[in-house]
Amino acid sequence: MTRPNPSVPRETPVTPLVARDVFGQRLELAEAFITLLAGVGVERGLIGPREASRLWERHLLNCALLGEAIPLGMDVCDVGSGAGLPGLVLALNRPDLRVTLVEPLRRRTDFLDEAVRALGLRNVTVRRARAQELHGR
Image (cartoon, rainbow, N blue to C red; front, top):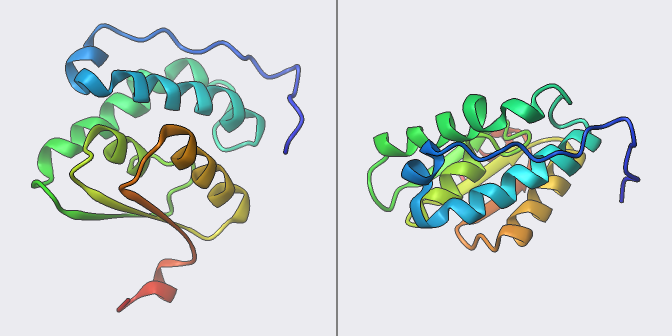
């Protein structure tokens, strides 16, 4: 486990009012993911410290809106998942989707696995691999 870095801001961004419209009953999950990203995500270098204050507007809300274009019950693959954007956001906001997160770097897949467990997401599979290694599987 990485030790907290005191130079990293630990403030969780304030939830904008529009987030309730976008996430509805899943808002608490989105807020929990924001907390992970703004804390552990910054500490582990998955997102930059300056991004923490912009997580809602630049990342979560935009990622959630992608879900409107995806039909019910689809399989979705997020290649190069990094910090889980957009894959984890789609999974938490759309429990009908089956989401596979593909990421080659262990430190990122460790974070993704931890986030999936912490958020209780049963519709997500994390794969440590390159996309070309999974072709045809």
